[in-house]
Image (tube, rainbow, N blue to C red; front, side):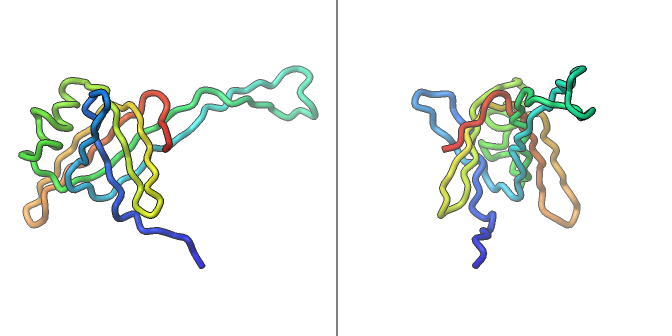
Length: 143
């Protein structure tokens, strides 16, 4: 039997910087992608590399980005320009973020990140949404 799971229940949460840190769930997140972990490959080929094959060593790691869409509500505290995501963008705030995977896993990834994109969309005959992009800076922690 497959162990596939639906993504419903995935949460994106914003830290408050306190000690202990409290996380607030970003309102009405739709689809989400990331963070996308990657590592550079650094060429280490030398004159004595066997049989003319290039050799590589692992380089620096990158926490990538996380992107997600929301049902945009400019009056919601997690979206707005005073205390929310737009304020983080305007103030160039690096804060801790957390993504929480749905039950039964209940795993979380926590990481420092800053907002690199906020793009609202307001079609005439559909709901108002916004696309958000965060750049991870530093090491994500899986718990």
